[in-house]
Length: 258
Image 1 (cartoon, rainbow, N blue to C red):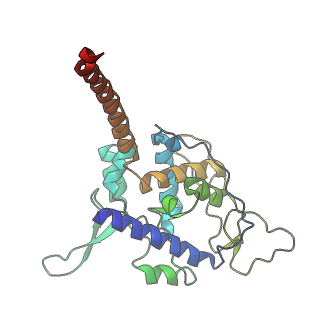
Image 2 (cartoon, rainbow, N blue to C red):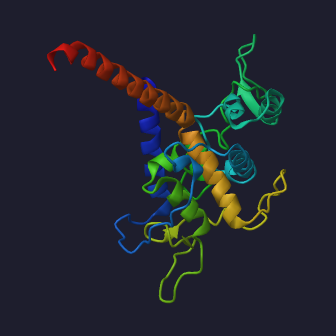
Image 3 (spheres, rainbow, N blue to C red):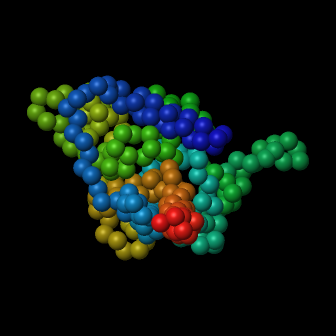
């Protein structure tokens, strides 16, 4: 229950922070709905594609993590995406985290370990806001759960940047995005073709980057989804067997009365 409350609070904070970043109204009724994508994890018995989620983590690490935190994830969770134990250790050790106090009562820096949470790009919310024109970038841990449209919306937002239509004035410091409510967003286009050179050789297009990082974010928001679906299948099979057994018992009990 406590963990669910924490997730709900984080989702609400992420939603509010995104509203603050935009500086626009969510009442705009002319915002088109982001086009639906064929996500493997949205299917009834679907799952996350490990290769896509790993590429998405690479996009997050190389592009998004410079501004956005994912405070609900620890590096050890990456093993669920297919990263080996040594790879997880190497990823964690690539960052310096503040630890302590030591025997002298002082905090110190050390390489990260798998048990550490993802390192935040800023020391606190105030520092994040100060570095981003007064608006702290939202945490992405639950972003696909916090927004209407979920993964489709996040993908649409990432690919929806374009020149403002004739007659539409974008204020200084803003950017036009056709899928963002109100259309004006403070965040500039984070991705483009070849933003990230994939280690597996996948062609690095804007669409591919957006799909992969959205897959990673969807997994981050619901890492237990696959286990829950597997349990659901087991429950359904159990209920089917139980129904058959109960029917057989009913036939046996009432056979002398027919």
